[in-house]
Length: 399
Image (tube, rainbow, N blue to C red; front, side):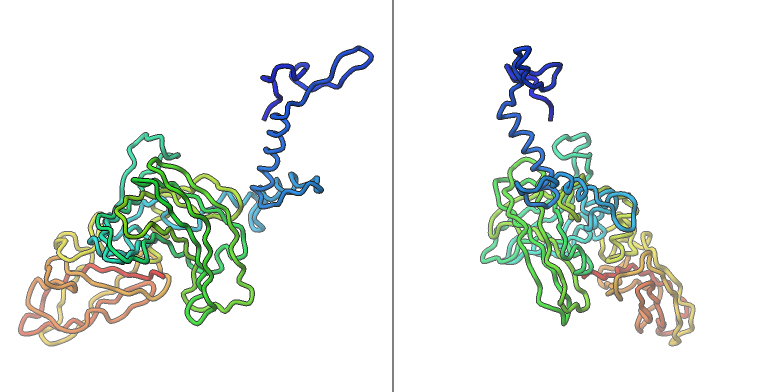
């Protein structure tokens, strides 16, 4: 805002308003309607951004708005918007531990870490990590990656075409004002429904779903934002594996390409710039839910090659005699006891392990906690007492 310096005849003196001087015979300044409306709109903008309802009878709402927008967290001496704003993980789509594409056009699930992509109706969909060109100016703050949903087979009678992230704990943002912000574009004008679901877990209260907004996407990158209030949880029964889910529902049964970038869900009525965390920190946050022993650049599959194997040990027990092999600690403690799947680095015929010499029988996993996997009691068969076993594995603790 500024004084209406560009408005002819407003009567400003030294750039400011002056009163009429009847004695000197000089007129007072005029307040153009456009300027008066702009000032009022500026104040109303601050009031509504703070989640307040404008009231003609109240004269302290701007002060209330300023206090609300800069309100410090009780445990910190700086505004809550300054730190750990984004309750989502991997909102910039930097981490793709399972690989940068889905396994096939009919296979959904988790692709980018923490984000599920689900569809039905025999649709064919390719999910992929895409790179922004260095120096591009369409999306702010020089992001590296975005997620692409490319539907090459429309399918029929579909009920779900969804990208979503589940946030641990239904207590997250419960009863609070929140703001969701994201960048998106599509190959044609398309609606994108954004919703939140408060799920109270097994044996908990009935889930509560709320439509945040239905956004109309265009063919160019655009920033979208909406503020809403989540229901409180007073009186609710909370069971195991409860969560808050943010979901993006795409149109059904159509060929389409939709791109998403910089997704942020934060407390408060104000959309703030996307929160960047170091990639190493973002990876650790992802590994609470999913971890692999594979080298970072390798896809999760059998037959990546013996030279890439991380977990290797030699079975030294005599024939037909068992032996405790080794315990491998997980890089990050899992949310719950994970599901472990093992892969053979040198044999496409088996997911489990590779026998360099001889053959073996028995269970290869003896112990499992949220922190470690014990590979155990593998019994050589026949007369060969020594053999090298190579194992690659994943540990999944997704909600």
